[in-house]
Amino acid sequence: MIRRRLSDQELEELRYIAALQFGVSGEFIPEEAKGEFSKNTLKLRRVIVDDKPYLSVRASDYRFNLHIPSGLVLNRLLPHPRLRVYVMERYSEFVARGGNVFCKHVMMADPDIRPEDEVLVVDEKGNLLAVGRAVKPGWEMVFYKWGEAVRIRQGVRE
Image 1: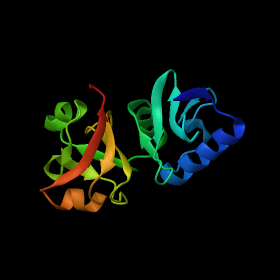
Image 2: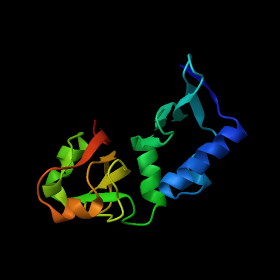
Image 3: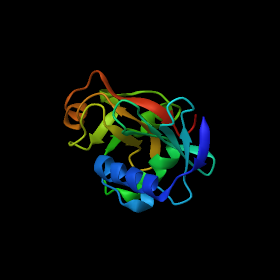
Image 4: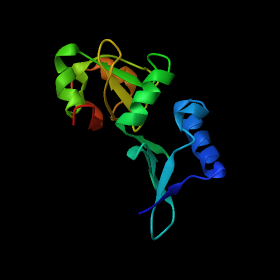
């Protein structure tokens, strides 16, 4: 991987993608962000902030995969309940350690979540527990009490 500072044009493009995917403004991706580029294709694979993975870029559709640092920023920027899945307190530790969220764990979820959306998994108070990808639509996570709701990528206590 080749790591270098992002150009103004690259930053602008990444912020545009973030605005489309998450509905956030320019402050989501900071000026000091660096990029990790593939040696073979020279395409952007990761956004790095403070020497930690911040976002990964999916090669197939150029959408973002969240990591904990970007999840913390999104949790602060987005109005509740946008892109959030709220889990019951008794399952919080399990999810924070990277356990997948099942429908029986879900208290509430943004009804606009679609399968394959990147989501923030939070506790009853709104504290971030994990980031992952939705398996079911948000309304279905609450309606049904069986099956996987969110496949966790990274928990805050991993």
